[in-house]
Image (cartoon, rainbow, N blue to C red):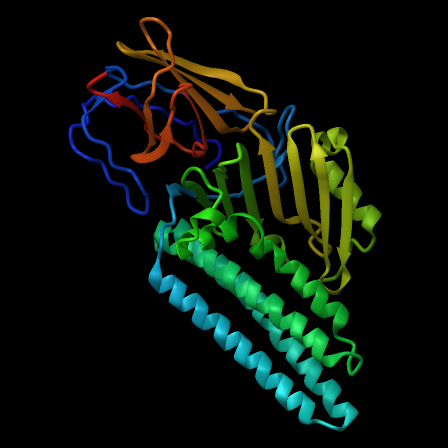
Length: 410
């Protein structure tokens, strides 16, 4: 839960054997020595922020969509999965076959009423699949929160959502092109495709690329932070272009069949501005798009002082269904959370407004030169501090064990 205070424990036992973490690539490290010996460990408090409604209220930073209730947090890294590749290709082929079958049957129809009825029926079928995709992902996320689904299974489900959404967008485009003026399906088809962008953009796509083995398309430089609850998901990571990317989805805030209370773009923009005042006060520009056929608005602060914000606001619930944030690590303010002095290495941990992302800087205790160390969170390798002694990472929202180790031959 968000109010739990993070705990950092400096490991006391020298690591003389390789360490492996489930679902984590490159987690092994041999002949390492501990940073320090502290009998009780060292407690580092996370940043405590007021939560109003569905959002954490942050100072000098964009507010963030949060999950309510009991949550589960973990780190995991997707790696090549041949069974996933085969399954996703099979799903794509089936979707294409169904689209081709519709096109063949549609061309054989001569009566205009029959053609219109067929087009509407196909659109409704695709609309049902979009809803099923959202409900299925929500079920997997909820099961993960309950401990019934592993991290690897959740990563695969998120990647599957991406692959299926791409296939459905293609099918909707084909339907629109095939039907033409025979039926008024163009607006609904386009809006459904726009809603699917929630599943095709950014992190789900990066996870899909990693499971396919397309490393050049996977931007994550670290394991993904996964936070799940009964009705919500947060995925976050540090990318190789020095950005912190965080995506939050609240499935309970989506109601495409409810009464639409927000109907104008100005209303949606003002509602979003109230939820994210700092982002809109510092942005160079905003963008608002209404997807009227699916009761959804996309509102963006395209270039605020720290990065980029995109929000999908449900017109019925008047709440945020999906939030995407990209923060430039070179532009986020830091505050010193703790400095730990060890026999060989000194570590300084800095937090941002909502704890994550966090930075750790390690230097040699004698001399102050940057120290190349390996950083683990709950046994999962976050990365190495490298020649400059610094590493950004995404800490969990509950207690965690931080291990900083150096080569024993140093």
